[in-house]
Length: 173
Image 1 (tube, one colour):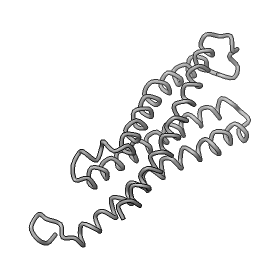
Image 2 (cartoon, one colour):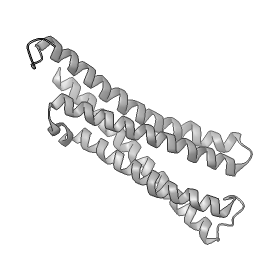
Image 3 (cartoon, one colour):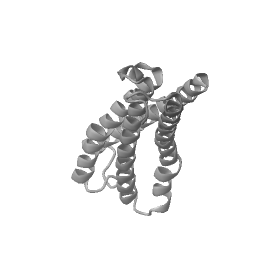
């Protein structure tokens, strides 16, 4: 770095481009992964695997990995937002607030909903063999519906945050 602690205009432009790339790459990866999971992985597991309980276990495992990817991507996005604003004020922009909400919803889904679903799956041994009238199966089905809604909310907020990020980039040019 030249000029002491100050970034020269050329260095500032390069850093800005890198941080904007990190934002779009991180958020695009997260949103794209959710879309792919919802459109291909989850339905594919239930169509291809003959054992529906194994398909459910695969979906739960994959969703856990997706949640980890999402939290890491969200944090990268937020760090890039702070870097672009050169202060924590970067977190009060609408897209950053959306990403914060996405992270909270994802952690909630993984830490509470998915954890409880896994415990129920273990208790029932087979979700598919457990009658819908069974209280454990009823709770599992209720939590599954909540999980789907949380993931859908994260996806929609992600689309909005990605749009706002790209729009903000265009305005800055």
